[in-house]
Length: 509
Image (cartoon, rainbow, N blue to C red):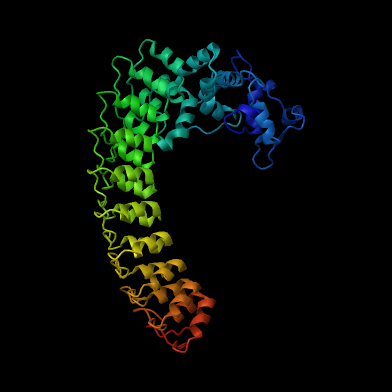
């Protein structure tokens, strides 16, 4: 039952403790913990322990498939949920310190129980499970399981460890156990709008997890605040939009007291977050509202379209480009436009969509004078480079503030395919140096990119012996860096002086 129905693979020490749990016991009896050999031996060869990981696994996936068939093991999640809750309610667990916790070696099953009791309980909730859950949640604010749960989910919710009361209703809402949430609401003193250490309410936890039944229950309560933000300014709608929970978004948007444009402390709206994560269904729901601003940027000047282009979400980009109130060429605070961003990340489909617009400048540089072609060339995105070079309004020789051209960047990073595409253009200067005098050949030699060096040496308009302002020639730097292949290529040229020194008089030799 444990090996086939646990929410994740169990280590042997976890499994031994799981098997030792007795229902209705007040504490764990160490004598009930079976030895490893007994556990594995009882499995008759159907389970093994990983030598490196100590994880117990079934010998073949077909055995797992068989054990998961209906009727093979009855009431599995009901049993496992009750075992986890019994373990968490043990006296020796309740006595563990809440903060500054590190896994005690004598309680190895604690973390699994803390993170997954609710998953088992939600799948098969029995009256006994409900009572055990309520017993645990009555002390949630002072229980180690809360600390472990928040540690696990903390990075995605910008939380820290609990420093004051964590209401049990928050845990029940997080796991989506609607019957337990309803029971906790009925208890005297339950504040349905209470924030936790992060300012999150029970509604927010339910919304962020997509627990529609819990959200529906809470929204039906008198006095519920459906738009209360947490410490980061993020509302239940913000979290539901961020995670792509369409059903919850519909429930919240049906309320007159929910602001669909509410910004978090970084200036990000629910639409901004939905576009960032590519949730087309949520984006459609939000764009259907007349009071939603589809072009609202965050504090970095990045609007929803910019974020969708960054991630390459073509479907979302199409939805936003269909709007007349979205500026398809709006740059962020660094001057990077949506097409710049899509080019940098190599999203060809998005670049095509933007190039089809007459109001998009395909050669618009950022604050450092770096164009979409420049960044695509530097990143080696050949498909994007082809699309941009097909435009008459893209200048392939436009340098950035350091004088680096698209060819220079492609040569520096050794992108042979991009170098070939650029050298096909008759208007590309293959020997144009940057501000310090280093040419494309110089930087390719410096980094040992033999393929690029060959391509550049095949050109009659490239000086193979041209030094950088404060340094040596391509041969000099290739020798210094130990790039033997490049040195051979350069020494094969009659127009390369093997004795030419740098500004300090040092020769390649």
